[in-house]
Each structure stands twice: as structure tokens, then as C-alpha cells.
Length: 271
Image 1 (tube, helix red, strand yellow):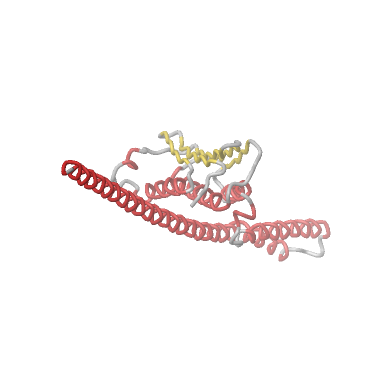
Image 2: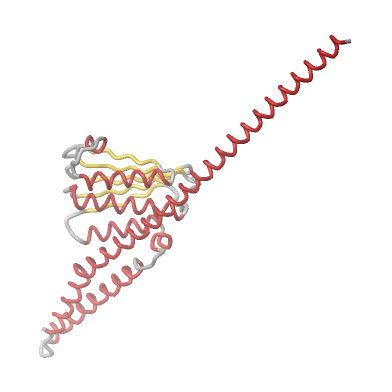
């Protein structure tokens, strides 16, 4: 009888210890789960805030670059057309009907072109510039402005059925294109820029190619001070592409040019 009682006590103690261990394991599991859950929520919130900050920064940079483009366009092109129109008006001689008719026709044409260009520029003042125009037309206008400034030939090629990705991703992609074009104009010493958009069902492939002097990519992988602002700009483009789940690749060959490639998965869910 005493032996049976001892066995019962031992069994109860063993079951109790087992239950306590299981309880401790469950509590530990729940604690770790909640800790990881809250950490995941915190990281996701940080990513969301980072994404929104980067999106706002891109919007402001696009507006700033647009204002610069508008200022240059007014000064270099529209201002010149209006100056020529004014010159025609001031040199008109009513006693020379043939010349007068020609100058009136030229003046009308110059004023018409100036009005047309001003209308185009007014679209750039819209805060939804990229969304309203679409990525292809927005990039086309950037290239048109560069070509009209002189010294650079530009070409835009599209393949496949053009579609829209989500507007936040289009905004980021457009800002990367702007920054890349700005680098080409400032540093590349090229004669031609070609932008190629390939619309595939599963992804959008965008490449920006120039035939300039190229550069050595090695300093970008270390802490070299070589052309620090230029290197920072490339890293910013890479980070922005990563933020929207896009691939970013830059290749360059000395004396042959540089190519920037952006790969945007279709249907990628941003933060």
C-alpha cells in the first residue's frame, strides 16, 4: 500500500513537472512570438515611414528639377522666339508689302510656337505631372527639353503593350530617370542618349544609355572620396529602386559610355 502511494506521489510530481515545463515552454513561445510580432510591426512601420519620406523627397526633387527645366526653356527657347517676334515687329516697313507680309507670317509662327511651348510647360507645374502624363510621355518630355537645349541627340524607344504600374512606383522610377539624365548631361560628355522601355507582362525593363566617356565603377564599392557627390547620386538611385522592389544595375566602359537598367516587377506590392 505504501509502495502504491509512493508511486502515485511520484507520478503526480512527474506530471506536475511536465505540465510546468510545457506551460513554461508555451509562455516562452508566446513571449518570443509577441516579441517577434511587435518587432515585425515596428520594422514594417519604419519601412512605411522610410518609403513615405523617400516618396515625398522624390516629389519635391521632381518639382525642383521641373522648375529648373521650365526656367531654362523660357530663357533659351521661348525668350528667343519672342525676341525674334519683337524684332520682326520693329523692322516692319509698310512701304514694302512683300517683306511686310513675310514678316507678319513669321511673327505669327513664332508667337504660335511660343504659346504651344508655354502650354506644354504649364503641365509641368501640375503636382500630378507624372501621374497625369504617364511614365512614357513624362520621360519623352524630359528628353525633348534636353535635345532642344542643344548638343545632345535623344531617342525614346518603347516595346510591348504600354501599361501603368502603381503611381508611387512610377514617381520613383521617373525620379531615377531624371537623376540619371542629369548625371549624363553634367558628367558623361556624350552626344546621344537612348532610353528604351520594354513592357513585358511580368515586368517593365527600362534602360538609359549614353555614348559618353564612361567611368570606373570601382570607387563606388569602397569609401573612396572620388567624385563623392556623383557616387552618392548613384547609390541613392539604387536605394530608391530597392525601395519599390525594382532591380538597379549600372554598367560603364571607359570611352564607350554608360548604361543604367531598372527592372520593375509588375504587381509588386509596395509598403
